[in-house]
Every structure is written in structure tokens, then in C-alpha cells.
Length: 185
Image 1 (cartoon, helix red, strand yellow):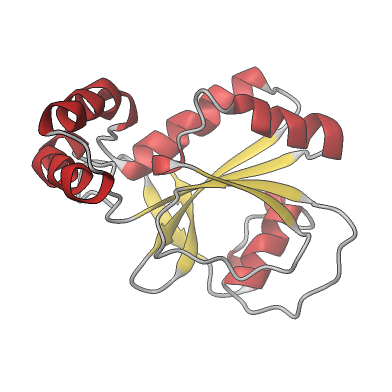
Image 2 (cartoon, rainbow, N blue to C red):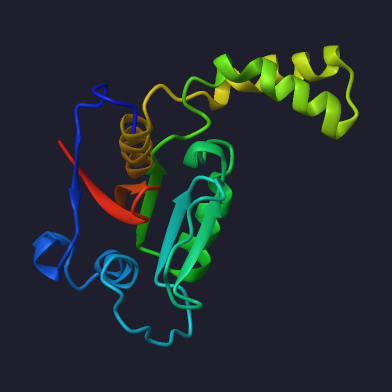
């Protein structure tokens, strides 16, 4: 995570005792048990939870089939894609949503990566430099994140206002150890 900017701390889940009582016996605790504590998989007929997480390829969750709807987008930003979440909540009766950020997210300080992205679009997509720069300049301000943890906490608050009967839990994934952490003030 971005060093020393966030006002939140990460709580490591190393045993079931580390899971707060308000999350016990929920799909959120099941997620933590599966991913961090290597609980044996149960079989599911339908999704129990929705997970919103970054599209970064360094993150892979250890969960059973059919356990979760997973929405992946740059920086775990779901703005503009809320209907996908609405579908899971409305159609599949999802009542628990986890938003997962991760350390070293490419969306942090995105504007500083403009030259690399533009060059890659020219070389890999066949765009002109002008097309690539215009594209980057149009979208980077929307997707840029200052701090991963602060962003995912604020996104969970924003979504809670939109879906007041749904539980939203922000978490962080550390690429170095592959574990999920709860985010606490």
C-alpha cells in the first residue's frame, strides 16, 4: 500500500480468532477462512458474496467454485459499472460485498506512468502517439488513485449509501504474501 498516507491500518487474519465477531458466520468470514486459512472447500449451488477487486494479474483468490461473483476493474473502481453489482444483489440476493485493493496498484500515481502507457499503446495497439495521448488524458484522471486503502474504504462508504441493506467490507491484498487483510481505522 502507499506508505504512510492512509489513516487506516491493515489487520492480518492468521486464525479464525482474528476475524471480528460482526463478520463471523457470514460469507465474509468464509472468504477469509478459504483464502487465508486454507479451509476445505464446501460446494455451493449459488454465489454467497460479491467481490470487487482490481484486474491486476498478481492476485488470485483461493475460493471454491460458485462461491462468489467477482467483478474486476482497474483499481477496484466500480463507478460506471454499478449495474453489474446491482444484478448480483437483485437477481442473486447478494447481501455481502467485499472490495479488495492491493499494494503496488498501477492506478496509484497513474499520470506519472503516461509515457510508458502511451509507448505501449503505440507499439502494441498500433495507435498513433496522438491517439494514445488523447486516450490516456481522457481516462487517467478518472482512474487515478492516490492511496489504495483510502480509495477502497471511500468506495465501500459510497456503495453503502447506494445499497443501504448490503454489507460492504473493504479489504487489502498484499502481493508479497498473497493474503487478505481487513482494513481498520
